Length: 256
Image 1 (cartoon, rainbow, N blue to C red):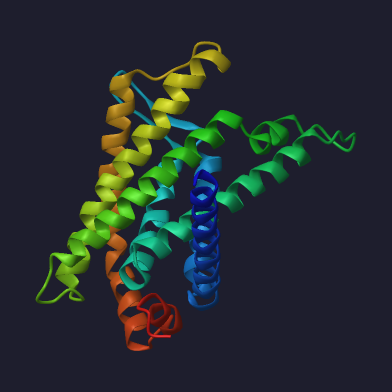
Image 2 (cartoon, rainbow, N blue to C red):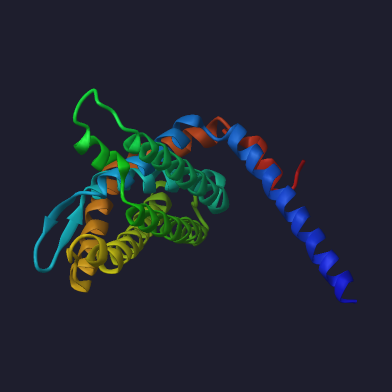
C-alpha cells in the first residue's frame, strides 16, 4: 500500500514537472525579449550596486541598489498585468538564476591571477561577496512573489474597468511599495545584521536603520514607479492590442 502511494505521488510530481517545463518553454517563446532583457539586467546591476552603502546615519541607511531596483519591479508589474503572476514569478526565478551564474563568472575572473596590471580593486568589486548574493537572491525572490500576486489580486478588484489606467496605477503603486519594502527589509536584515558584523569587522546596521532603509527605499522606488508607470501602462496596452503572447495565454486558459 505504501509503495503504491509513493509511486502515485512520484507520478504526479513527474507530470507536474513536465507541465511546468512545457508551460515555461511556451512563455519564453512568446514573452517580449526586451522586457525580459531589461528585467535580467536590472537584477544583475542591483546585486552589484548593493555592495556600496550610499547613506548611513543613525536612523537611515541606503545602498546603491536603490537606484535600479525600481526597474525590476516595473518589469514585473508589466509582465504580471499581461501574462499573470505565475509567469512573472517564473521570469523572476530565471533572472535570479542568470544573476547567480553571472556572479559565479565574475568570481572566477576575479581569482585568476594576472601580472598585466594591479587588479585589486577590480577583483574586490567583481569578485563580490557571497552573503550579499545570498541576501539579494532570497530577498528578491520573496518580494517578487509578494509583488506579483498582490498586483494580480488588486487588479481583480476592479470589476468595471480592469484594464483602465486607474486599475493599473492602483495595482502597481500598492504592490510596488509593499514589494520593495519587503525586498529592502529582508536584504538589509540578512546582510547588514546577520553577516556584516561577522565578516566586515563589526560593521553593521541597526534594526531601525534596516526598517528605515526599507521604508525610505520603498518610498523612493514608488516615486520612480509613479514617474514611469505611464510608460508601463502604454506597453501593456499595446501588448493587449497586438495580442502579444496570445499562444501562452490560450494555453494557460486551456483552449489548446
